[in-house]
Length: 233
Ligand SMILES: [Zn+2]
Image (cartoon, rainbow, N blue to C red; front, top):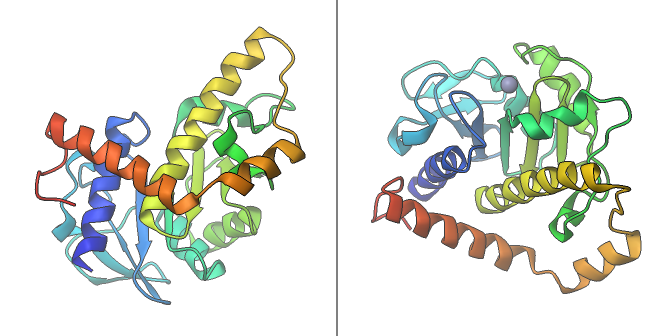
């Protein structure tokens, strides 16, 4: 559990440094079938303390720790309830990625090879407000369905993965893809990866190894910058 707490805190600190989390947005990590770790609503994401993370149940109630969970805790509780195989969830507000919910017909196409993760689609949730109720959380989980990410109209995005390391790597790749896609759209007709190209990539791609490599890189940079304590693995 100590390791999991540090993973959540490190993930948060590194996503702030990457310009993906800011004064809001959060990461959750499943502890067991009914509980998960999540930060308080106002602890600073850039310096998240592992020991201050809350243990919250699937009803969004704090069972351990001091402080209130984020207003949008139901993003996490209802996705974790609906998707037992998901071990980590993040919700953030990366504006360039959110622009795809603001333009008629815009769609996040897989243009970078790592975007093969989202070959089965990235749905857009129509509710532009904050997810402040159980019902809204359930509706978001329904939009997400069996996908690995969803956009939230005029608001942000949610990404899910099997664990915190893969979640971090997925978020970096999702944002890279939307960033280069926006650039490509300005140059001309976009040529997304074909199904055959995605299959080819997936055949040679080791998801766990890549996640560990991405994590190792950002942790090293984080330590150099003083964002991550030197004794965190
Ligand atoms: Zn939000």
